[in-house]
Length: 251
Ligand code: PEP
Image (cartoon, rainbow, N blue to C red; front, side):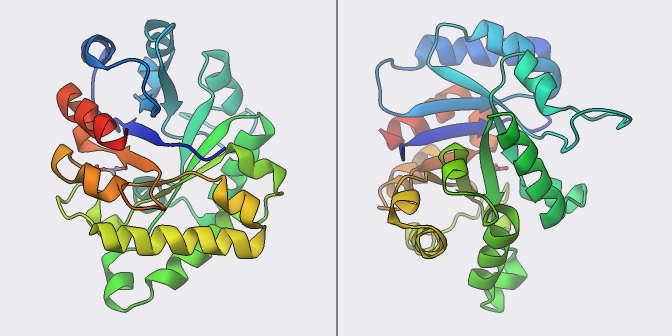
């Protein structure tokens, strides 16, 4: 069911004690009883303790990555089963930093999605064009190909565990934000392509988040667009007051 989500991607930030300080601030300051689903994605080393710390709150925990194999000789990697064993049921897949710095191809990402879904996890799947794609007016093709290669092999039923995050690469961590109109154009395009591939029901029930330099000052305008169902937040998720202001803007 489509609903509003604000998720914080903490990337490679926050030690164990810093993680708990930020979680405590969120727990204390976050207004209760609101409609927005709140998710935080700390580093792997802090996932288990974050889940324990957030028990009984409305804040959920996601991982930033998962390996596609069930297990085995993959030094340094983490499996879906390991995430589930510490209570993590949501995973971000396909973030542009994973695609860019770790060479995660569309084929690998599709494998990761399959593995996560096989374990009944929820996937926040990131797509987004680079600056050169926007400048050459190829951005819709790039988005379409990422959708097709990463997700369009899934059955209708599997889509109930898919959330999409549209994150233009040129807007991530740069301070540049897509305008609300640019975000709406792409979100509507994504929804239209999901409907074309599946049906209206799947399209209307898929949450599509915007990510890329969302801040308290621009969140409300972006979130007010009809096809924007919340956000995936990087830098601003590391400051409790900013993250809370963004969550409030989504309410
Ligand atoms: C991100 O990395 O997913 C992101 C959106 O980062 P930022 O908000 O810092 O641009």
